[in-house]
Amino acid sequence: MSRQSSGSINRNITRIEASATGYEVRIMRRGQRYNKFFSDSLCGGKRKALQAAREFRDQLIEDLADQVISRKERAQKLKVNNYSGVAGVRYVEETECHGDRVYTYGYWEAAWCPKPGERRKRRFSVKKYGNDEAMKRALKARSDGVASMVE
Image (cartoon, rainbow, N blue to C red; front, side, top):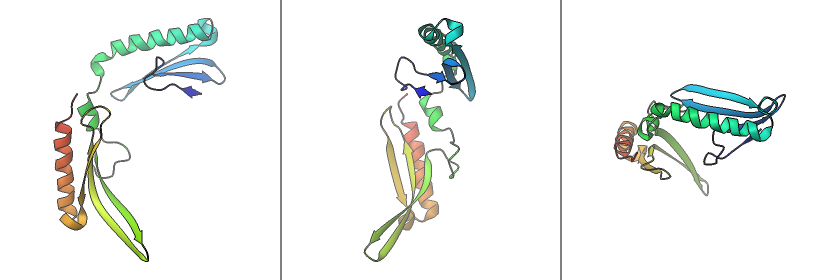
C-alpha cells in the first residue's frame, strides 16, 4: 500500500494492492468516516479506477463542505494522548547531565499555531512558579494563543 502526500492531486486516495487491487477514498469529517473502494477490474483498469476515485472524492468534499472544522475548533479538540485534560497544554520534564550531576527541570508548556505552518510554544517553570501557577500561566498562554489564531 502506498500513500500520496496531502497536497497532491490524489489527496485522500490510497492505492490498494492486496487481494483486490484498486483505489480507496477515505475522508473524515467531525468523527464520521466516509470511504469507498474503486476496483481496477470493475472500473475498466487502473487509470479509470483512479479517475472514478478522484471524481467521487471531489464530489464528497463538495457535499461535506459545511462540515469542515475550523482551525480554532480543531485546536481545541482533545487528543487521545493528552494527559493534562486541556488541548495544547502539557507537563514536561527534561533531564540534563553536567559531569556527575543530573538536573531535572519540570515545566508546563502551551502550544498553538497562530497561522498555517507556524507554531508557537510558551513554557512555565514549576521551580520558578510552583506547579499550580505554572499550569495556570500555560492555560492562559494557550487560551490567548488560540484566540489570536488566523482562520
